[in-house]
Length: 485
Ligand code: DUC
Ligand code: ZN
Ligand code: ZN
Ligand code: ZN
Image (cartoon, rainbow, N blue to C red; front, side):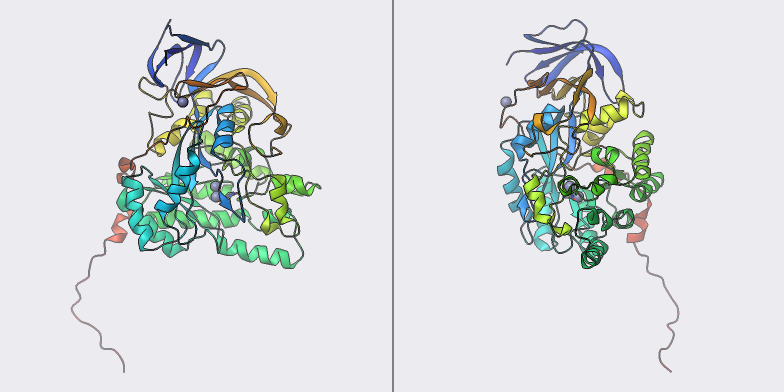
């Protein structure tokens, strides 16, 4: 492989914007400066040269709700690259009673088809000695330091508070980070049963069954349990003020808690569920559901103020045919929406073009912040000498209208259909290799490599105050009162 130089662009990182060329050798950035030459020269005139996006929340080919999500590691990472995302982090999900290492083996097998680099989070879907023991191997040998807990999906993926507390304590010992899908699964189950019994079977009932309160309650609970266990906490798909408020408060108190809004929740609202077309509404069923404008404003304010840290997708794509499993019973509509290809352009359009975010803040929330949290910075999330050349050359003048007819995702619709976006990749590079050039896709199946992530121990050591709670002091008493009469 010869050298490549990205010429005449403006380098935009989370800290700085400056004009420079970027030289790449063997997949790594080797020089940043003026008038650099390479065997291959990519013209970035008028463009921003940014760290490729990292989407830390995908479900590719995931067994879920009686089926499998349709985008796999091939189509999913192709979609990612088309939109300027160069790394995805997928959730390895053990079936009930399945060991963590067994589940990881399944994810290893699926991910050999990836077009871009990837990593895994481990899900803890049940608790027992085997999980306790295997967690150490997952962290120390497999390079996975993040473990997700579902507080919803009762009877399937959900873990109870005792299991969550045990797992969080184990993670604190190992230097890991706890993640939660924060919705009160008991209340969701009750509300769902009640709605169905009253004849509310359509997709709009999905939103009624998961109001913001179930998310706010679970987020507060997870934060307090994480405090008591002494573990950092990452709250996935923060969709509403109720959850954001809890995260904001925790951060102000010095707790290591992060919130992750999705591009869908930032730009699409609950009115989608009241569309007269059943398919339209069902295609947008995901958990948590879309919210109203006040909640959307709260999420934008969180990104602007820094109380929310990362924009992700929860990409979990089901076809219309799969969504129709839920005709007559909204609880059977497979939960999930796509967004891998659209996250960067939609956020640029609704965030940067509107003046809500600076280009540097855009880089922070799409790439750099999560690289630091997940402990793969500056290999990923950086334009620095020595960093992987995962780069998006974003042309702020390039426009398109989002359409399922031109997307890379394997499903037959797009929740952003018809949205005009501005700010598209002129080039996307994965470890120095051009995967996208002006909409032309040149991905290479199997090019993607697994990114190992060691425990983020400085973060675990910087936790605030609760430790005292777990160190009881016996009290010496002189007399013990007599009992009985
Ligand atoms: N929510 C979804 O909508 N899909 C996958 C899992 C989840 O938590
Ligand atoms: Zn979730
Ligand atoms: Zn998810
Ligand atoms: Zn390759």
